[in-house]
Image 1 (tube, rainbow, N blue to C red):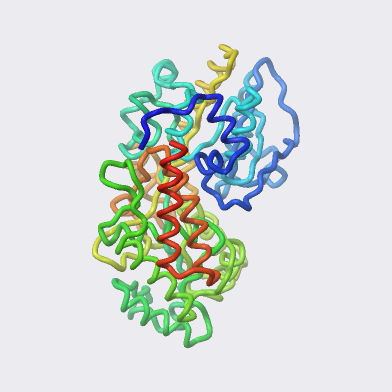
Image 2: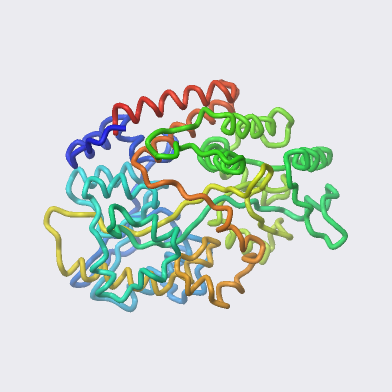
Length: 456
């Protein structure tokens, strides 16, 4: 890999106008759109902070609600947190800018115009891309001023926000893939023990046998989103890790996706389609709807869904018995994709000291309420929260309490997001039948090698 870094100007030019730049900082499929939503009410006060986030739009649903416990799901929980802050800090109001996940195209355009928001949600493995161009403000001194104890962060979370010895973000969670189960379907297929607990497959043979039983009752075993990372790269990575493989070379200088482990993982996943265990050519919302309606035995999605699905069982909904377990371990060792959300402060040509001080206080507020965010299903980033009785008492947490032991973090290298994007495109071609698993991996390896050679 070349040691030469792109300049800030060249980085922003590539990000705004070329495919290589898009791969450098984007992880969603090329079809992902980006929108900005006008907040319901413009903030007032001496200091106004624009906060850019995804997590969806639930402004109307949670309008004026400030009791933290009333927020549900990612969107609701954070919207209520924002409402509470604004109600208590009329002199430091938050204006929310909403973008479709993951939002980096919009952010790059804002950087190019030298007008980024004051606060932005970012995935931890993107920090090297932006930090290496001096686009993020180091937060070490701000944390010290506000009394944010970096030693209370779990190691994985602290690693995600650290680049070249500087802390460039406030860690917010560690998240990753889980297996969400509709126990009613498992019972119908005879896949529970005498106590009604699901008999979780422990290898590929047991997985296939269980899938056949669900297929026999006219339902699918494990639906996947086949037009995005949730059903392409992330589960593939989990099965690669379980074989002792990695998509990165040991020195983190090259990609290693066209490997025996990579092929075994992708061929196994594709067999779900050829054997009729999954619904073909399905997207996230359709897979989720099938799960909620009892049309599949479960599906793989992230920690972010736990509170939402738990809530469905409390309502007059079709999902009556919900359970969540770790990403299925079907090969030799535990392994699952994981990531991290964090909050960053973009750099500006003309910093505003009053805003910087206000951001520090807002970050302190977020850090103090990390336990509230953990209600989503994500793992908290503070040791003190993880060790608390309050966190351990949350619904379903005991079912995936050892998730952190299997979670494998993305390395903080500049081409990690490009690898993710290219692999997503190639695995999608497998799902629709345009390529064999081997053809997809060979092409992905070639494309990633070319990107590293010319763009890094």
